[in-house]
Amino acid sequence: IVENCTCAFCGCNCDDLVYLVKGGEVKGELDGKLVTSGYVDGGHVVACRHACRLGASKVMEDMDQRLLVPMIRNDDGALVEVDWDTALDKAAELIAGAVRPVFYGWSETSIETMHYGLELGELVGAVLDNQATICHGPSLQAVQNAGYPVNTLGEVKNRADMIVYTGNNAMNSHPRHMARYAAFPRGYFRQRGRFDRTIVTMDPRYTDTAKMSDIWVGFEQNGDYEFYNAMRAVLRGKKLEKDVISGIPKEDIEELVEAMKGAQYGSLFFGLGLTHTLSKQRNIDIAINLIQDLNKYSKWNLIPMRGHFNVNGFNIFMAFEQGFPYGVDFARGYPRYMNGETNTIDLLTREEPDVFMVIAADPGAHFPSGANRHLSNIPVIQIDIHWGPSTELADIVLPGSFIGVEAAGTSYRMDGVPLYMKKAISRPETCRDDEWIVNELLKRVQKIKGIEPKV
Ligand code: SF4
Image (tube, rainbow, N blue to C red; front, side, top):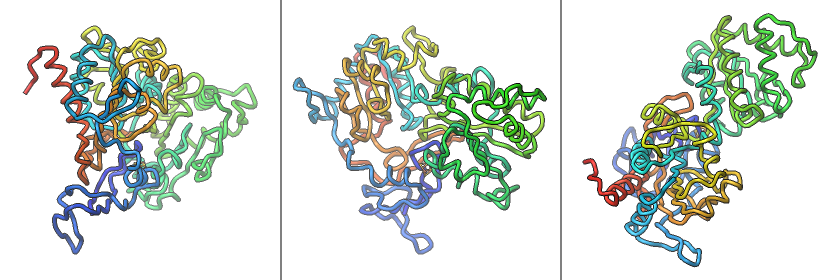
C-alpha cells in the first residue's frame, strides 16, 4: 500500500490517493499494514482508493498501449526498435540542426523536466508552448488584461457559501471537484457541507453538473459575453432594456445578481465554455470584471478549471523563469511572446516549424487537421508513455515515465498550489524518466554545438 499519492490526471491534483501495489518489494509494516518506504521496486498498481473513474483508469488500466522501447521510423515508414543511444543521438541531431524547432506539451510531466526543456529551448532558439494554447490560453490573456482575483481550493472548501460553475461540466471533467473542494465537503465555516452552499451552473446544456446544482442558467451558446455584461449592468444599478438576454429573462438575471451580491463568500469556476466560444478571452475579461464588481458587495473569487494536472505548472514555471506563460519564442535569443504569432497552432498552420518535439501531449488527437498536416511533413520527436495518434506522426519515439506513479516530480494544481507527486512503483526497465530524457537531449545537443555542459 502506498499512501498520499497524487493523481496525475486533471487539475484537481487529488493528493489523497492510496495505491495497492502488487509484485513489488514490501519494505515494512506500520499499524498492522504492509507499507513501502514510498516506492517499491517494480510492481503494478492493482487498486486505487479515492480516485475517480478518470484517475483510476489512468493509473490502473491504461497500460495496454504503453510505449516500452525507443523507436525510429525507417524508410518503409514503420517504427522500429532501436537502442537508447541511437534514438537520443538522432533526436539531438535533429534538434541541433533545426531552424524553427517547437517544443510542445509539458502539461503531463514534472516541473523538473520542464527545467531541462527550457534550457534546451533557449540553447537552440525554440518555441516552448503547452496545452494552454488550445485550452485556457484565453484565460491567461484575460488575466493579463483584467487581473486575477484568485483564491485557493482550501478557501473555497472552508468559506464558500455560493459556488458558480460556468462553461464547464465539473462532474465529467473534474469528477471529484464538487466532492473534495467545492460543493460537498464540510469546511471550517461550512460545517453542514452541501447544505451550507448554493450551487449555480451556467451552461447552455443541462449537464451532470447542472443536475447537482440548485440553479441552472441555460443561456444560449456563444451568449456568454452578452450575459455577463447584463449581469454587470444590473450589478451597477442599470435597467436592462431587453426583456430576454442570451435566452434568459431579465427577471432571472436580476434575481441571480441579487443572490450573488448576498453571498458571504462566492467562488466562480470557469472552463472551456468561455475559452472556446465566440470572443474567447473577452468572455473571461468580462467574467473577471464581474467578480471584481461583486467585491464591492461581498467576497468573490474565481479559479479557471485547468485541465491537465500540470498545465498550470508550465505556465507558472515559464512566467517565473521568463516572464511569459506559454508560446515563448527564443528564436532571437531572448524570450518573445505574441499570441497569434508564437503559439503552436498558428506556427503549424503557417508551416513554420521544421522540427517538432512533443512531450506528454497528444497533438495527433487534439490539434485541428490543418496543424497536424504540417506535423506529418516534418520530423516529430515524441516523449510519452502511451501509443496514441501522435505516435503515428512521430519519427522518433522516446518512452518516458508516468509522473506520480513511476517517477516523482512537482506539479501545480488549478489554483496554483504546488504539490510533490511521489513515486509509487518503478518504471519498466526499458523506459527512462522524462527528466533524464530531456537532460540527456540537452547534453547531446550541447556536445554537437561544442558547449561545455554545466555540472
Ligand atoms: S478528480 Fe481529477 S485529480 Fe481527482 S482523482 Fe479524479 S481525475 Fe484525478
